[in-house]
Every structure is written in C-alpha cells, then in structure tokens.
Image (cartoon, rainbow, N blue to C red; front, side):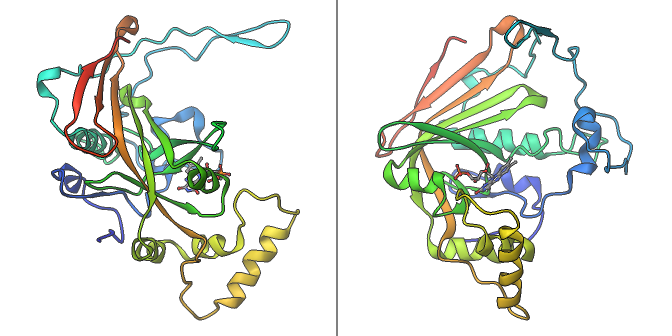
Length: 288
Ligand SMILES: Cc1cc2nc3c(=O)[nH]c(=O)nc-3n(C[C@H](O)[C@H](O)[C@H](O)COP(=O)(O)O)c2cc1C
C-alpha cells in the first residue's frame, strides 16, 4: 500500500484500473485558489499570484425573491460541459473517474491552479438499519481498483450507520466543469495497516485532534480544547499513534453515474452498474 507524503503528480491519476490514485495529503491552502471563487474568500485571505481564471461564471448571482414564508431562488443557469459520448466510455468506470479527477486537478495551460476547487470533497450518504438517511462531506483520499477510500472516526454517527447498514452513496459536484459523479456501493473497513500509514502522513495537529474529538458526540464548551491539550501532553516528544477508533472505509461500487451538464437541462448521463458481487459493468444512457 502506497500513500504519497505530499502533493502527487496529476499523471499518477491516469493509472489503469489496477493502479491507485492517491489524493494530495496536504492540499495547497485555498487562498491560492481565491481567484476561482471570489465570493467565498474570507477577508483574511490575500492575493498571492494573479493568473487567468480558468472558470468564468456565466450567470449572474442567483436571484432571490422574498415570500411571506421564506425565499425563492430563481436563477436559471445554463451548463455547458464537455459532451459525454458513449463510444468513448471505458469498460471500467473507475478509469473514467480517474480521468475526470485528473482533469479536475490538472492546472489549465498557463495557470498554476487546478480548475476545480477541492474535487476530492464528496457528499457521503449513509442510512440507519431502518433506512433513515444522513449526509455529510468527507474527503476522498484514495481511489484504487476496488473503490473509494475515506478516513474518519469509527465511533462517529456515519461509522455507526455504516456498521449497522454497510451500504452508502457518494456524490461529487465539480461545479467549475459542470460535472457530477454519483456512486453507490457497499463499504468495508480498510486494513489497520492502511489506516496507520495514512494517519502517519497527517499534520500533528490533526493527529492530536483525532485523539481529542469524540466525533459526533455532544461536547461541553471548552472541553475540546482541553482534550487537545491533554493529548498534546500525553504524546509530547513522541509520534502520535493512530487511535483504535480512527481509520478508513472503502466503498466498493456497484453503480457509478457520470453527469455532464448541458444547455436546456438536456444533460449527458451515463450509469454503469454491475452485480453487487462484482463482474462486468453494463452501461445505460439515462434521460436527464
Ligand atoms: C470539506 C469537508 C471535508 C471533510 N472531510 C472529512 C473527512 O475526511 N472525514 C471526516 O470524518 N469528516 C470530514 N468532514 C466533516 C464531516 O462533514 C462531518 O462533520 C463529520 O465527519 C461528522 O459526521 P457524522 O456526525 O455524520 O459522522 C469534512 C467536512 C467538510 C466540509
């Protein structure tokens, strides 16, 4: 198992299906990307490198209309992604995912910046054994031949739901290129060795945070800072080991849909499916 210690070269992401694509462990701070999202930049961020924006908004800000009970959102943005064409689809959807991810991470010609901000951020949906769903954003850390890996606290709400019901869904929204990828599959824990190897690459502050935070539990004001201090004292002068309650999940997909936004909502959608146990992928174009 290999995990990159720092930003990897985008070319690794073009690996074939037996290879792995590993996401940056310490991504560049987002103030370097501020020009892509001028409205989302905090006031403390400053411009560091002028460059042509690879993404130009094509629509005005979302129009809003107050109603007696709330607000209506009335923009009608048009999408215009690169067309998706059945004849160019690979047999393995993970190859297409890696190619799209590489494009999202590869700086445009003449720019040091990738076109998509934090493409590894994905919405993870889980559900209780009774089917009550919950969603949150987590970071994709690796795509290998088997599936999609993320790391978290094994005592968190999401992990409790995954233990009770090992099916989950992912959604990537790459707004700047008008693309979406949806994934459905079954999860399994990654090996302890994989979790430890990844944990060792994390900044020390995040490592201490993993010890200090009982993720998803109610916590008293100030208690987290005190717990971080305790952890810092406990491991002073030592490496911070990976807690037993922290590690990775791998989602092994049996359905992956690629969506490329098109004008008039006539989007391209292709859905790959295979039996849950694995085997050949079938592909269908779906109506938008
Ligand atoms: C951009 C972004 C990235 C995140 N990445 C992770 C992650 O990789 N792992 C994680 O446990 N939580 C991550 N979180 C926090 C989760 O969204 C969530 O708050 C947390 O995991 C607790 O979720 P739960 O109570 O449903 O288990 C991230 C949040 C954001 C907004």
